[in-house]
Image (cartoon, rainbow, N blue to C red):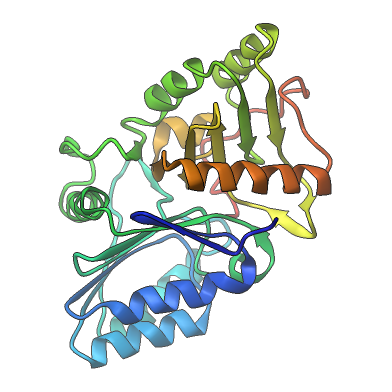
Length: 301
């Protein structure tokens, strides 16, 4: 089965490309007072139109946007100017040491989205990506706290945030290393930039101990471009978000991922991974190391 949307508890997964844009638009339409958008790229005019519609109905729309994305220097300036002209409160991410790569939305105090995709036509239509909608109060509160922190003092100490969120770079390497180290039965990963030497060594050690490790990397996945990031551990835990298992992403970028432990959702994601694995050439832990990423590379994602 290849699910499009799977509902369970406080989280809902959106996996099928045909469902993505409308899920984001519905979330934005649900906002009555405030709408927070953490943005890396956006070129989809339906998203832009929804920002304008939210402003018109009196919603305070705030956008935190990267200043650095490969090939987008001028487009980011134009996008920021457009959003401001529509009445949105736009704030460029101003950390001098960290790049901004987080992708999430919060509507009021009721619903949040954490995702690996950008709000672009490409990601809505042509990529393998993952979205998690959540009404978990801790997730909503954590994202709002992160948003405010990054708007005010992006290099300041990160306040305490729920363990359901993995925030990079402060927590990502430590927490992901710990979670992968604790794997006892299986590890499944979707990540086309799995290049971190420490993580690769950890996965190699897992395989040596007869713990199966499978990685879907570069290439087309069922006709879709590999772009999303997902980690599945022991059929109990899933991690979805913007974090790559690469040195720049783990160590020097603002990233956000969400931890899912609902058994039904994790089971569905394992099934989804299995379907993807049958449709693409698998790239395993033992594949040759890719060249280390240049920390100045802006990553076209």
